[in-house]
Length: 268
Image (cartoon, rainbow, N blue to C red):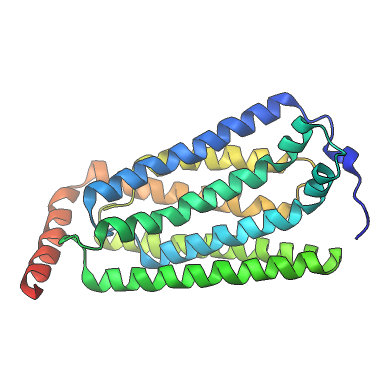
């Protein structure tokens, strides 16, 4: 592979780096309300199984994309062509997306950990969640193998795989909100889905997209999925706010939970 021009990553603006660090902290904080709601509710009701599957897979695709697209900057860091600050700045988006991917997959982990023995959890739904967890694990392993192939071949193959992953991430990001929106509409309440998380992530998604867009030598496939996600998540947020604050959702939610508890009690 031809050595990259490392000067493209030099003299990074400190202001943009500071904003990126704040965004990174915000990414982590934004997921805390969702984790807390799962712990409190002890049920996955309100979270679409397909949303968990497609959301996890889309972010894994995005992370693979940014790993491949960051290979040139990483090379410049490895050979010492960049100052420490410029090196950190060139990899900040990789860390951001890696953190977001981990936090998103952790939602699946929290659901499994805190609903496994809960009497409020629908048993059939939990079995589907476990199947999703296995599929996500297989998907992650396959993409690790894909990255190994990309780095072992030519720059053209690496770029083609990066673009493929970016397109797949965009497609899954669009698709994943459809089952979640339908699930929320069917239940007529947000359930375990956190309004707090979406209230932070929706405006943050647009800011994050802008930070990726203005990063040096970033490819469009690395930021387009986040723009689409912010648009669709905003629609889902409005829907949840409507059911939470403008309808009598508590009676509907209580009836659903009571039915599940009764079914689990009878089975035991």
